[in-house]
Image 1 (tube, rainbow over the protein chains, first blue to last red):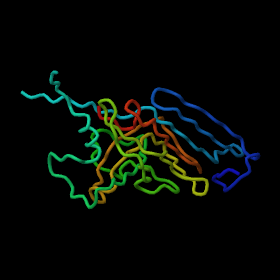
Image 2: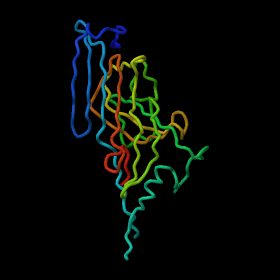
Image 3: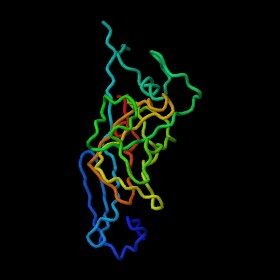
Length: 62
Length: 159
């Protein structure tokens, strides 16, 4: 069963679309379920690859 | 032997645990880790290095999304390796579940991690901003999986 905008629906009643985005920043998988041409479910899973980095400044005296 | 100018690696790790105070710091009620939260922002918002506190301006709204976002799981203490101090949430950050799916109809592309223990409501200090490809969610879930918690990949690194 799939959670949808119309409540729980049997997956067999839905058209499933999936996609992947992979780049230097992220690996993302998304899945959509459509019912009679209407988007009723979309979930996304993002794997963050890129972090935030603060480079320490060497202590300079003088 | 010779002396070498450096930022002490231990200091980098201790920055992540509030060991040092060069100015005026909050009075801590406990020595335990603070609670951190993760809020999502619209692609049209302006959240960046200049962001100082959590704000509702530009935050996503939608079914089963609560303003302020969700609590970040933090069961792994900051540490150091080589000359880098680092920290990563110890679990994925997830919005919605099968029993409580979220709908976020307006495109969003950013998560702000902020300290929900320090400051006060309306002035919770910001920690970091992470962007990703623009997304929407429809009666589903949104999960952010964390990078490997090491000196090269950790979510927050001081090097």
